[in-house]
Length: 407
Image 1 (cartoon, helix red, strand yellow):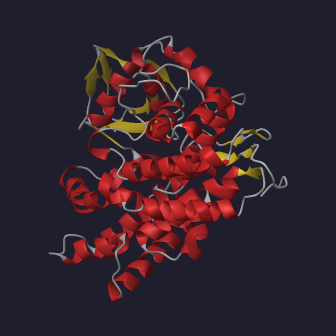
Image 2: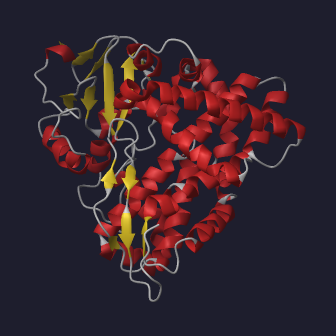
């Protein structure tokens, strides 16, 4: 067995001055051509799907949230408390218990019941755009739509959606190494504020239960004390933080991809039955979590390579996904390989079904209303260390009538 530290591995450096997110696919492809492992500044990259699934499913590996926080000197306070109790950082019986309690709220059937709400919200957002034939899509649709959806799912007022989106954007940066190094106080302040908000929402739902997720969590708490108040608050914060910024980013990339592939957009508009496959292709081609970290809790041997305890690996969903489908964006292609976009194993993304439903409803709604979709300027892309987002996405289309207007 050869230790991973002894291997001469190619390097992928997302901190390099000339690194650019819009060409990182090519850079990763070049590194992948040299093998299934590579070095990065903080982790060893795992570049093929089979190896990725192995590390994501291994009980000897775990998400290194606490270790990353400690590396940046975060060992106490609201941000540390959030990280320490985050369901991503839990394992064993405690993790299984929380997943079992909240799992029923995130089944495909549970997600489907919110589809009519999603359609209404999309229609409301479209009213702010039409009859114009251009907009800055992130501000007009992609940011407010998931925030409004999650507000409805949780039972929060729609008027709070903008605040929820801003909190989500900041709290999610706990997974972004660059942001932790430069925005730690802002992230901590957002965690404290959204935790107070979640506690207030739960207190209101305790007084007046409704048919929403906050009320469901309280029912689970009250039934045999299976969920503590602190656990309820943390789960609400996890939903707010994890289900807004991610979906807005994935929707932004979806429209960016379709603007670059107008034939695919026209095909989708003509055949709404392709919507689920189109969402799958977007998730495959441009995952907004390109790298998912794991730390080896004990020594691990895989393919004759030893990974000592304490080694951090980063599973590359971007390469793993493309291994099963190639480098072409095609919503009509048959794809059989499982995606790594939502992870794998015990920590498979709890909100995957809700995210898919939101994306499907958005593409089904938008495709017939935005014929001739095209870029109306260069997009502004975020970094790839945490959530790979889209900061700005100017788009235009050719629907008859209406002035051009940038929102």
